[in-house]
Length: 324
Image 1 (cartoon, rainbow, N blue to C red):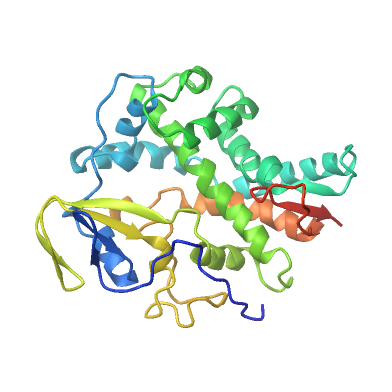
Image 2: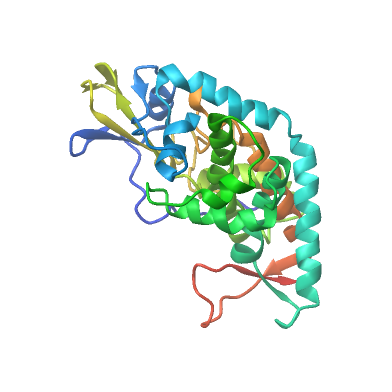
């Protein structure tokens, strides 16, 4: 690929030393973000306990939001569920389902050539494939339920339908299985949409895995994460007091020129990895699985579709491609 420039999304801060911001710090440099992610003194903000069955309970039960003394055990539940899934098989399953959806689109009543990547593929394919393998009774119906929960991550959201679909298991096991789906809903979908937007016309010689790795850096589906300093520490030359919040900007750190020369250029095969999946003991345990699902969808789209020019009647949140 001829090293095109991909500008940062609006709101991405410049990369530099930690800056004080309303009782906390904004962290933008690659090395500083890695330092926070791997420092046990930097902990996730606590999630309040809540009655079983609601979204607040889900947040409080999954490893992602667990305190240090509960994290390892809860993470092990998610890791065990993921260990039973072969990323290569997930990729093949995503390819097959994507192919069937494109075949159906080719015979549909929408002109037979345009496909809505956002609505028809990006969330649907990864969630159906993953939900089926996690044992949910109705993977197709789970898509709408998981999407709604992911979009409304607050205590009032309903989990009843997803809980009813889930196989029998202890409450924390069920919560962490559902947590895998909720985390995958927007992140994997966002990566697929970004890869199609930036790379559908890329040369065939650029492998899909390499395409995804660089898109993950330049247009990350997860742009920020948060930590709290449990003890005083020094970060990037700045004194951080106990209790101060740390806002980690993956979008800025992924464009740190100290880690990525000519950071706005699309260049496959970078020496450093993007931080979008995190790092350290809380790095995303499903990274290989998410990339496999995304690669399955994007690989088929690269072979069978071409970019579609935006049309005035299509919302900007919708990304369409044209079948070849």
